[in-house]
Length: 456
Image (cartoon, rainbow, N blue to C red; front, side):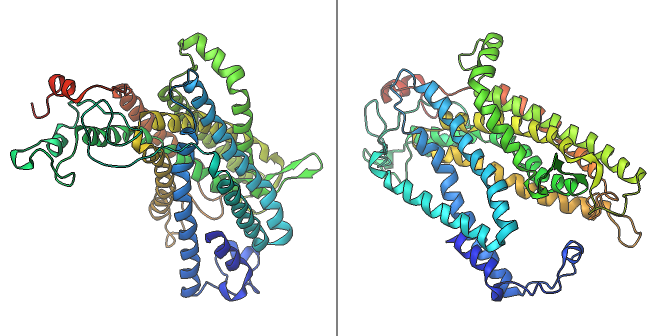
């Protein structure tokens, strides 16, 4: 529905402002006719509908796919590891198609055709998904209150032994005399329910540390495209559209995931002794460390690019490519951020799936999506602060994010992101050091009470 609404917005003149007098320069300078208030309401409505649909898909699809594997299988861990890698590989292939085929459709046939193709593709994927319904393995989740025995009342979920973390939450499972022998689940929680909440709280710091990576990715998608406008995008006789530049992180992810099991795992296994090369948190840490290198290189190259533009008389020509400076220097930061994504996001998804409570794995996976969304919001807030603090129209001082990037200071922003990334990486090391991987226990409630009595 959302993509169909966006397609209509891009094709029907009544839903868009008059563009007759809006050329490329006017668009960049903000001199085009603004949209009417009701047009903006319609646009935001269909965008939020699209976002609402994506919010239902992203947290559930990875968890549902991982649920298809049998935990009792001897190769369960290795199959799960490969699944998350191939899952992210499929996401990357979709991004590559979006930045190439869809961009080509947009250039040749307009925005309406581009969004329409996406709506058709989403409709086809829904048909394929529902056709496969009889083949899926489902976990039945019913009930709330625990019953005596080894298993939790929630089918498919194991009982969890009491821990001393967040002891203030134990009051929810503290049984009083007036609760009787058959207490209402609305008045009294089981120990397992309380421990599930504790687990979700203990997981928060890890995905929170990946917000910084999402912030960097968001900045790259906008700033690097502006940089590419000033650079030569020719590859031999082929001229690559500037809007296709963000495809290169996807290509690097595709290449790295293809070589992951044949190169990285054997080499890292010799160093760490870990059967999968590195633990989940180690992979997240590697990704965050590589993202620091990526944004630091971006600052170095942007300083060189800006100085080159000023020295060769391109300071005012921020829409004219410099023929002697190739845009493919941007590939270094693109490749580095692609490597960071592979290690960080894939490791995070696997970590959240395995560490989340059995009945709440979708919520655990949702943490990764929430971190990604918060990174986008953080980038918007950061840009607004930088524009207001560094720029002054009355004094004629351009902000770091000036429309003319040769007058702005993108390099300062990249260095600021580098410092923030280093601080974030230190916070991650502290959180990862304190975190203890969860070991599932299936014990009798009587044994739990003897070993870990609640309230004492």
